[in-house]
Image (cartoon, rainbow, N blue to C red; front, side, top):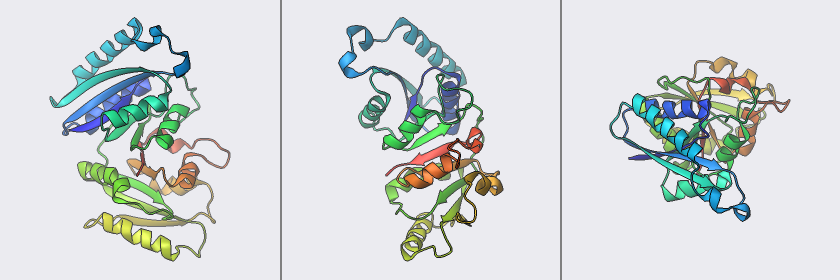
Length: 270
């Protein structure tokens, strides 16, 4: 069975992410590990913080009751956890203890304002926890993932561990993958980039992904680069390629770009 971690602050965004998870994995046996964290420094912990408050218990009960009403697979099992700790520490511990295959969470929580597309907590989990993260917008509704966009500049080598989640999710949805090649100049790709390209394509064999090439020296705004890819159902980035992640998550004015409002965003680790 798959082990999926669902961090929750009981907001509508996190509830929507949980519903999305049940629909996405409707045909897959799963343990869903629901985690609520109160961020309290360890040196300030008191006995009162160590156990669930009546409010948290009530919120969990409401969430579980609702999930039971929308569950369609009897092999979906729910487990609840409460931690008083820093969020990253708590998530890392759960990933290790429960052998988590995927973290699925909302793009933002109840503490983020309307203008924020990806909240700080979600961004921190994406970049700091070595586990694949699938972030779901509050505006996203589930549909079969038929076209997955994978931007890359081939400056890192994608090992089998990094690609495993992407290949599994693509297989689960019978999705096609479009590799969006991002090169900094017309002198690229270098020999190393070409080797990484060949390895990546071989990893998808026998289905070869669609290739689409852009030179960022000509077009610096990633929002404009994505205009021709409005028909995709998911965007995938590799956390190891930090520069590319930051380019696609923010534009030159350091503001989040709006395409993520509608699309699931998968960040791979390895």
